[in-house]
Structures are given as C-alpha cells and as structure tokens.
Length: 64
Ligand SMILES: [Zn+2]
Image (tube, rainbow, N blue to C red):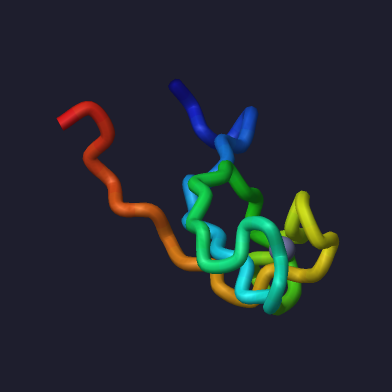
C-alpha cells in the first residue's frame, strides 16, 4: 500500500479536559491528519465544542 497517494490518518488519543464536559477526562482514539503548521494535531471536542488540548499518539500494535 503506497502511502504517498492516499494519506492514512494517524491514530491519536484525544482527551477533552474542559470542566463539566460530558466526556471530560475520557480518552478517545481518533484518526487524525497532521497539520502543515503548528499545532500539528488539532481536534475539537464533539460534546462541548472546545479545542482538545490533550492529544497524544496512540500506541501502535493493534490486534495484539
Ligand atoms: Zn469536551
């Protein structure tokens, strides 16, 4: 599978830290594309709509 033709999203772990958000401190694994300019990883919380400040790479090794 050539990855220069169709970019595959990188699996990231996103955690909303907004107080009183329904999903506060809950971590979700999402496929994300890196941005050309910083911040490289950007996401918006689907519950409260605030930018997610806590984004880290998901551990690899799915299916193990
Ligand atoms: Zn939220």
